[in-house]
Length: 388
Image (tube, rainbow, N blue to C red; front, side, top):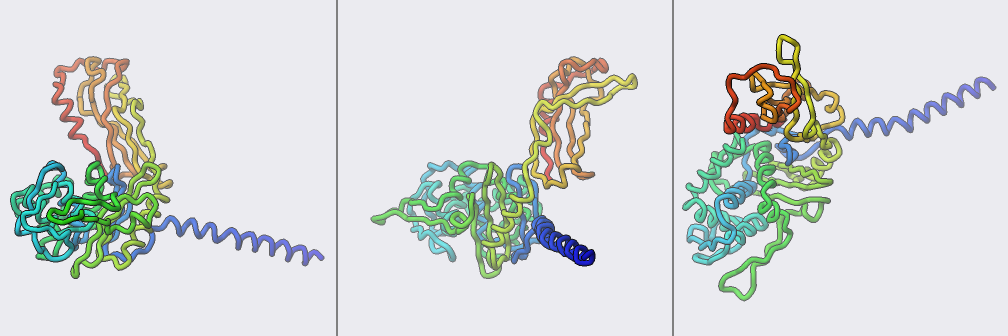
């Protein structure tokens, strides 16, 4: 009888453990990034610029029509949407994807941008390049200038469309993720790439051009709102995608990805599940630091809030450090920028927030120099934002 009770108890414990184990395993498995087909890929949080995932992210690769993201944002920033653009002969009959522009046909810049991003028109890309840059080489100069400004340090453009004209047209998954994040902050760009269907004029024809977006994720994935498809024989399948859920926008890049649609959806699912926005510093948050040999302290206030995407295990690793830009702080600096609150995950700095002296802080020393308005502005600008 005792033996039977012992065996029954052991069986219950075993079954309980067996039933409970899959849940533990599934939690562990869910925390791992999904396996994907892409040769290179990156996932970025658009607002913060943090790279959440990278696979061969710094490998220089062909990017096909993902190039047109840069073409579009350069045109938006340097042109006017209402500009009337005449199609140059160089744009007619460009190989690959086309919106069938005719020599001398007139469209607005806005219409050309829809043709560029929804139907990937290579003829639209050349037309835009001539209008904005005066020529393809002139426009390419602007593209590379913008790439340097964004911080795309492993990128070089030689054309506005991404056709395989040389080995000198390349980028990386991480660089293109930075570009997507930058472009998606522009409301005009964001509106264009999230549009599923658009009618634009067709001079000389009885009906308009009807442009249907090639980006299938706009129909397949909840919250999808961009960005661009791409393919050439050498680059293979490339995809830039984005989605917004609960106020958070993520963007992915997959290069040479046989299963690009599923790759992108899996990466964004993982990003939305594993990371959440955390208010690391609140606007007005007060920090104190000791400055003098007398042990006197100074109270400083954060000039803005700082939100960052973090995994659960990272929140406990957050550290903060006050760094002052003034050797001497006096009551006269009350309300003025006087330093930064640097933010770390472990030993890695991920950002910083400008700090101002609170009006009720004790006087630490008589300052012999009071910074000018522009000196204070420069210090704030120089602080900038860091990305992980």
